Length: 331
Image 1 (tube, one colour):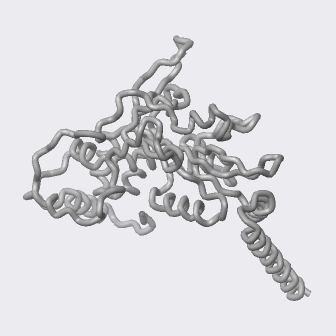
Image 2 (cartoon, rainbow, N blue to C red):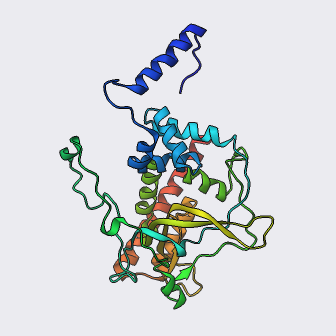
């Protein structure tokens, strides 16, 4: 986006006409309709809705058509339109344990309760171009696991939590009400709730790269996918005229629960903890402290414990050497 250079009225009008012509493309081909984009480009529509913070498939498809398929520009258009809409009510927290799943997998169960639901995914394709798509094929009804599971499916880790084998995470006491970055301009530094909202609306590719680098770069903090799911979740609101919640519809939503090790127990024994998002330490010093406590309190072997001590000791020596060099330079 670049608007620093401005032209006359005739130049601006000509630029808009050129944009409309480029959007239409070859006039000998049929024009793509909004309904086609919403139905056949569902993942792109969902991405624009997520980054634009507005759950409306038709409007997202319209923004994609107007932006010539540019997801960033389409999300920008959707965000601009969202600011004109009134907020009528606040929904209740989504109950993801009552999700009608389209996809549900787990990496920590040999026999997952309820079974694995692979669903529509690219994970099992060969990542090769399918040239058969160049020619039109007759439409086929979805079969098998492409259909959502009609019954609600509880979380896979719920049974382990009930037996006390896994420690669930809970909100901190006195946790304040989260701010809303779609209504209030962000003021930096943002609190944790604001940072999470920013990440939830961030570019998908950048967020995926940051998530993987966080998981694989911090020693013992790599979590395991306990329950990763996608499906329809009921959206409930409590009207002013009633004192109970009513369902106003369902929205497709992803949900993930991860299992990670924790050394925060007083007995210094490693335990499993359930988290609902990617977790990482907030500072380098805290990461090193976590590494040292894990290696000291729960070593897998004497050799690994010695290696952990050497790594920590060498890091401290490098830090001390760097501090001495800075001090000598300053004097």
